[in-house]
Length: 343
Image (cartoon, rainbow, N blue to C red; front, top):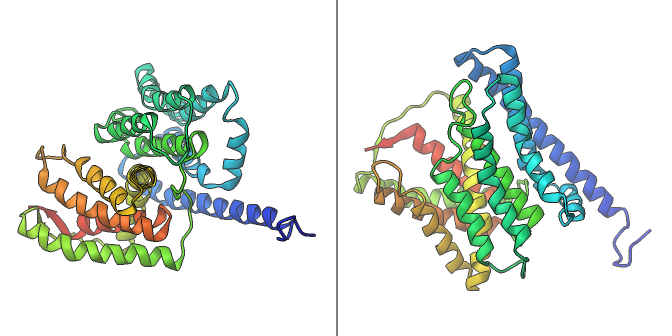
């Protein structure tokens, strides 16, 4: 049987089943990977089993919330309920569920921490529900507000000190922002061309590798010339290198590429009607986001980060997917941490 378009009628269901299986494999793989990482973490910070279960449960729920917008089934479901009157309250409730899991298991519930979570996630969500959405491909002031609010929350570390057992768990805060940003820009206010999908192809890998090589050819001699970096190898084996790479990919690269390439570069490109100008805007904004790193103002870091942002943006343009720039970004960071140190 065929649809009116001439394609097999079963294709949509088959595609949905394939994407659901891919999503399940992705989340399952991350659960297994972070189960191993968690065991190593708990060897360093021994905790009661109840605390360990709560921390791991919180992490997995955050991973699920961050990954859900990449699933076509999740987008179709969101399209049905996002305009209902109770939708904003339901979204806010879902977003804070991981904190309740953490607090219930560790006994570290603080009302001030919950208020801080809501102070980060409620304003961008509210502005999208209060301000009528215009053409989805255009950048308007509500977008600028939401992007700036979430970006400053990351840059200024407004979520530090919320997950504090056994130490400040910054990766939980970053996953929380990924979940909030992706739900806002995939479910509530869909951004065209954001590339929020988990797929790997030869094209994506080539784009990531090509732009990593291009950045390395420029950045390494520039960093030495600017006395920004020094050679200091800290190789701890291939397994440790891979572990660091995946952690950076999930907790750092994916968030920053979502903010600067997926959202900002996509909308700036349409606003300025130029892929090059859109890429330049996102690159400069990415560079400036590093100005407060010690010693502040750190203009050398801004310069190199802007160059890095240009190559991440190029990987995004070539791959049309956030996976491409995220792979490049994570590789740059893990190579830096393994073989270089600030001069």
